[in-house]
Picture 1 (cartoon, rainbow, N blue to C red):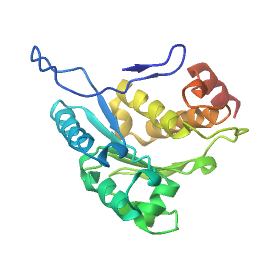
Picture 2 (picture 1 turned 180 degrees about the vertical axis):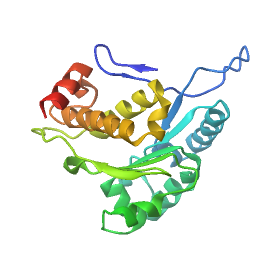
Picture 3 (picture 1 turned 90 degrees about the vertical axis):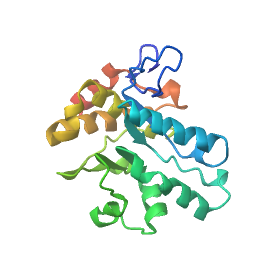
Picture 4 (picture 1 turned 120 degrees about the vertical axis):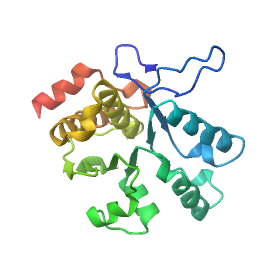
Length: 218
């Protein structure tokens, strides 16, 4: 579990099985990106970790976190990012990544659904100051953002995802209840917004009290 002192406790686990004494880990979520897919042996290790996590019952959460300069080409990045698309339970992409992966400059339901797969439980599109869009097998919609004085956007997406996964670990029924999901996404949007008001990623993560203050004051 990743824990930031006096800040949000992000229940993100490196899902694995304890091969020493045969005990399964207590991992609930395995969260990963796409950068480790670029070269070996990281790619093989990444794929194995996903396999073990799935077998141990962990939720697989994927944030491509596109960093084009690290890839040999845009085509290779797109190919490899989508190569593991059908393995995840939850996928979060930004508006920029939505355009990159679909080839469309439109941000709407039709474009977003091009990234939908039957295996998915939740697909999220983050839109910066415009909030976020969500899609499940049973419902979809959008949640508005919080308007703040932005200083640095570094870490905003990580803060959003961390808050979301933390809440899902606490209550998995969130994924089946639209009203609960909307409340959680509102909380996650607030986390992301506050993170942009300070420089840096980890130092900018908000406390829960700060998040609730923003929500209640909105």
